[in-house]
Amino acid sequence: MNNCRKDQQLGASSSEPLKVIIIGNGPSGICLSYLLSGYTPYVKPDAIHPHPLLQRKLAEAPEVSILDQDLDYLSEGLEGRCQSPVALLFDALLRPDTDFGGNMESVLTWKHQKERAISHVVLGRNLPGGAWHSIEGSMVTLSQGQWMGLPDLEVKDWMRRKRRKTTTLQKTEN
Image (cartoon, rainbow, N blue to C red; front, side, top):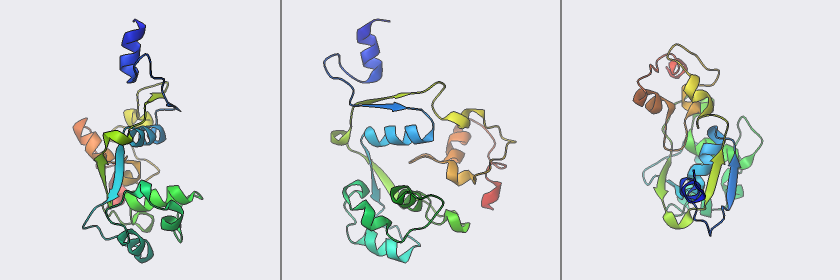
């Protein structure tokens, strides 16, 4: 394969170096690539978050992307499974009541904004998605099925497209 073809596959021209290299093509790498590709999270206009303090803060700037807001301010008072305030915030926005056994839809919508895109490449040993490729319909995960989704892609939708059975994977949602 010649160098020109490699550059086209990586999404860069020979005169423009890549600005970011993501090592690892599992869920975290895919999410970061999605953001770097210009997909920007906004709160859905009609969304009501079950956490009253977070809902009040989100209502202060409804037309402003989450990425352009004060993430420290938005994440104040949130609790969850990790210590990172930004990770807690995005978990709360993507899966609003999951920690309490609910399965409420995400309050986020994603808009593609080409001007926000940053040239990057994702490197990984195997196909993107990691464990998703080895999940069979009869398998059960430690995490609830809805926790395995990505921004704008729920694992149940991906599995449906792959013609895999999701009932056992999602059984903790019932």
